[in-house]
Length: 120
Image (cartoon, rainbow, N blue to C red; front, side):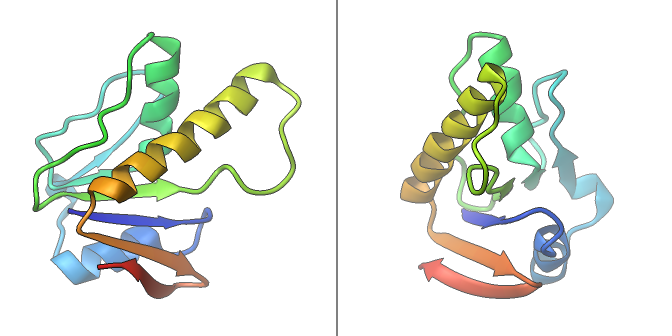
């Protein structure tokens, strides 16, 4: 399993699509309104799923099959949000990302479209 992380608009999905030959049907884009389709090869915008979990009293899934690609924005950097829910989401996203990274075979961070493998 590979975890792909980085800031917004850094090319994470383009990187994963090219590396794994993903098609639109292979990608589940997470929403804050429903649970994702974990049967897809790639789970994109995983941080939104973390917010869905918070709002629904669930713990996020942090362990996946070997062939999965999880893509997550690192929303926990920068200015601390004023709204309590956003602060809690930011913290939960960081904890979730760390747990997924522990279970991942590979962790890749993208910055300015440049991938850097930080695990595996």
